[in-house]
Length: 180
Length: 298
Image 1 (tube, rainbow over the protein chains, first blue to last red):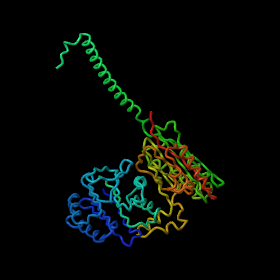
Image 2 (image 1 turned 180 degrees about the vertical axis):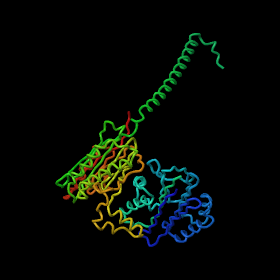
Image 3 (image 1 turned 135 degrees about the vertical axis):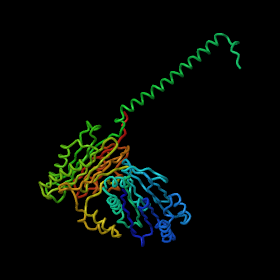
Image 4 (image 1 turned 90 degrees about the vertical axis):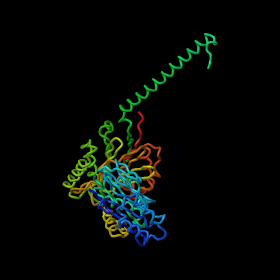
C-alpha cells in the first residue's frame, strides 16, 4: 500500500513555478521540479519537465529518464526523480531538491541510486525552500507522531508557518509511506 | 653470507641468547595482545547496557508572579532506570479554569502510581493518559484541565506523549527544536489557510486562537505520541517544560542560555535565571525538567 500527500503553495510569490508530479501506475513515481529557483525561463522549463514525464519517456527507468531530462532541460535545472522498484526505491536528484528518509528513529538524506525500504520507513521529498524552515529533528518528530502522511505534512506546514506565515516563496513537498 | 664460525664462542652464545629472548618477547607480546582483545570483547558484551547513553537529570519549579503553583512535575525513580527507563513529565494547570494546581498534581500523581510504563507500548501508555483525562472530565466536566508533556527514555531512544501546549524541546547541534506541536486553534486555522493557498498571518492575529483544542480533562482526548521512538545521541538536551518558560525565552533564544559543557543542573539553573531576569510582571508559573544525554564510561 502506498500512502502519500502532496503540498503545493505559491507562498508570497506571484505564481507557482515549481512542479510536483505523482503517478501510481505502473510504479509509483514522484518528481519535483524546482522551477521557482530559476532566474529565467522557469515557466517553460517547468512545462517541459511535465511534458517529458507525461510522454512515453516518463515510463523509462530512472537513469534513462534522467538522461532525457539532462538533454532537454537547462543546465541549472534542479529536480528530483523517485520511483518505487520491487522492495525499494530508486532515486535521482539534481540540485537542491532532495528526499529524506525516516528509519529507526533517525533521519537522513536519500542517496542517488537504489535504496531498500522496510515497512516503517517514511519519506519526504521537497525543495530546499521547504526544508529551509525546518530542522531535521522537527521533521523526524512529526513523522513519528503523525498517523498519516497528511497529518505529517500539516505538522511541517505549521512549523514553517510559525516562522514566516507561509510568506516565503513556492513550497513544494510530498510525504510518502510505502508498505511493501 | 656471514661466516659465524670465526666468531668467538662466547659471542655466538650471546647472540643465540639474544635471539631466544627476542622470540620469547615477541610471543609474549602477541599473547598479551590476544588476551587483551578477548577480555575487551567479553567486557564489552558483559557491560553492553552500561555503555549506552545515560541521563543526567535536573529540574526547576518556580511560581513566577502567580499566587498558586499550577505546574506539577514527575521524574521516575532512577534506581532501576536500566530496566524501566526514565520518565519525566510536566503538567500545567489551565489558566482561567478552577483547581489548576489540583488537576496538574493529580495528573503527575497518577503517572507515579502507574509507573513503570512499557517502553514499546505507546498505545497503552497513551490509553493510560486518556484514562486520567476521562477521570478528570468525570470530576469537573471541563471545569478544570491541564496540559501534559511526558518523555520516556530507554537505552538510547525516546518516546514522547503530549496533550495541550506545553513543551518538549530537543537541543541538538546548538539548535532547539520543539518536538510536539501545540494543540490549539491556530493549528486548525493554518491547515485551512494552507489548503486555500493563502498566507497564514491572520491565524496568529486572533489571540483567542491560542485556545486549546485538546488537554487533560477533555473527554476522549487525542494524545499525541510517537509511534516509534526517536534515537538520541550524546550531548542531546531534552527540556520538558511548561509554557511559562518559552513565553519568556522564545525557542530561538533558548540556546543562548545553554553552555554545552554544562551538566543538567547547570543548564536548568541557566534557564531558570534566564526567565527570572526577564522580570515579566505577568510571569506565569515556569517549570522544567532538563535531561542531558551523556556517554557512560565504565
